[in-house]
Structures are given as structure tokens and as C-alpha cells.
Length: 398
Image 1 (cartoon, rainbow, N blue to C red):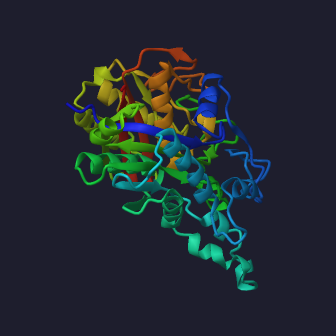
Image 2: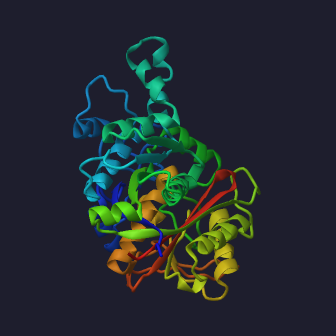
């Protein structure tokens, strides 16, 4: 009987590392990537704290060997770097040997460039090229073209659960026999629009965020990209592939509570976790670690805490949020945390919830605050987005 859909490769770039190994080393050394804005020209520069990737756009262009006439957004460049690492990690040399797809998630899309040239494009034509790369699907098309994928290309944008839904759709397509392998994940860069938007919502922290802490004041935004290579059992067997982990469970639910807030009792999150466990055909007691959504906003962390109690009762598994390392990377969040979930399984380790001091009074849950060695069979990873989009993934040991 199949354990699920095989993960055979992964790639990532975030504020704590430019590849999988660098991210892992930062996680186990408790090295966070949060600092004051340096690269974006905004009135909030050197004030608001974010998870910013060290590469400038110029450095990314050079790294990807793009022409001077390119119209790549930062989102597309970050995504291409992570996707190429994932394909290389999966030892894929002929992308078209099997029916292959790409499902990429984003929320920022190309707005980092269109907002930069919004006014100047009326006077000059040089930077009007970025209008064509504004939409969410453009980065997917660019990543697919760079990898040579033509069989199936799709884009998902469901706010902060986007890349969880990309992974879920990819797994479902493989299980349905519609595709042999698929590169799934997401990419989002920082932009003035998102920084100003979250500031308007009054959910940005002025300091390093504190997930699940009673005195949390909000989130830190971040930028990142991460992709997984999912392959069918048939491909794994034919190619004698090394399996990193399995996507064994997945689900999406919506509590239809509010445009931006989660319900107080976490109904959507509860449903997503319960349905994912049902798909994985495992008991809640089988979950060894929960990589929580844990944004450090007052609403999310209380709602998610209640949902964890709804699902697991008095015996909530070891859990932590890794967003204090990277910031909340929006559509890329679930993909980078999928990489972290698989690293946890591979290295038998739980990554700490940084900056935690005081439990939330109503739920009294305490996350893991130190690097903890543990045999891990199953990791549950939560991702909850605006509009009530609640998604849960379960990764299992190969």
C-alpha cells in the first residue's frame, strides 16, 4: 500500500539561507533572519523589521544569467532559484522523460516592480515591460520555461495558504494518475504594497515577533521561495529514486468567518487538520510534531491554539512556529515550512519557537523553545490565509 506521494527533491531560499543546507544550519543554531528594511525604498526603511533575503535584484539577475532586457520580478527570480535547486536535488536530468507539471503559488506576484515604476511609466517606455509581469501567473510561466516544463502549469493564490494548496493539488493529481511528477511550491518577495497593507491592518510587530506568546504584538513580514518535487510510486520505482518523505495527508477548509481574521474557536483550522488526518489514515496520536502557522498576531495564535486543542485534546503534540526565523512569507510560507517539516523528519529534530516567554492564558499551550532531538514519523504543518483559507499538510517518514 502506498505511503502517499513521494517527495524526491526540495529547494529553498529565505532570509536564513540561500539553499536547503544553509536553512537547516540556521534553524538548529537559532539564527533568525529578521532585521530592519534595507533594500526597499520606503518611508519604513530602517524602521520596520522584516525577513529580507541578502541578494539584491542585480545580484539575482547575475546569478540567473538573465539578459539586460528581462522583465523578471523579484518573486520570479527567487522562485526560479528554489525550483532549480529542487529539480537538481531530485537528480532529474530529463524533465520531459515523464509527464511533469509545475504548480506555483504567489500573492505578491510582480507588484514589486510595477509599484516601483508606477508613475515613471507614464513618461518613459523603458520600464513598461514590467506591466506584463505583474500578474500572479507570470512567475509560474517563467519558472516553467526555465525548467522546460510544458505538460501542465498552474498558479494558486489563496493568500497565506497558497503553497500548501499547490502541494495538495500536486499530490492529488499524482494520486489520480493525471501526472507522473510535479514541482510544487511558492514564491513571494517583499513589496511596499504588502508592507503598507499589513501596517494598515495594524498586525505588524515593531520588534522581533513572538509566536504563541501572551504578549505577542504582531508579525514580521518576510520573503522566500521553496519548491518540492513530487513523484509517483511508478517513477520512484523505475528510477530507483531516493525518497525524502511522503505527502501522506492534506486538506483545505474554510470557516467563512471574516475577510482577514480567523474564527475565535478555530473552526476552519480544526476541520483542515481533522480532514488531513483522515486522508493520511492516521490517528491524531501519531503526529510527532506540528509546524504551526504561528504568525504571532493576537488573532491567529489564539485561534490556532484552540484548534490544536480541538483536534488533540489535552495531549497536543510538540509544536513550534518557525516564522520568528524567516518572517511570514505569505504565499511561500507553507512551502518553506514543508521543507522544514521534511528536514525535521530527516534529522530527527524539532526546531525551536524563538522569542517565546509567556503562554496564552486561555489555552496555556507551550511550544518547544529549544532544539529538541526526537524520532519523528509524522509532521503536521498548518497554513491559514485571509478569506478563511485553512490548509493542513502531513509529511511522513520514508
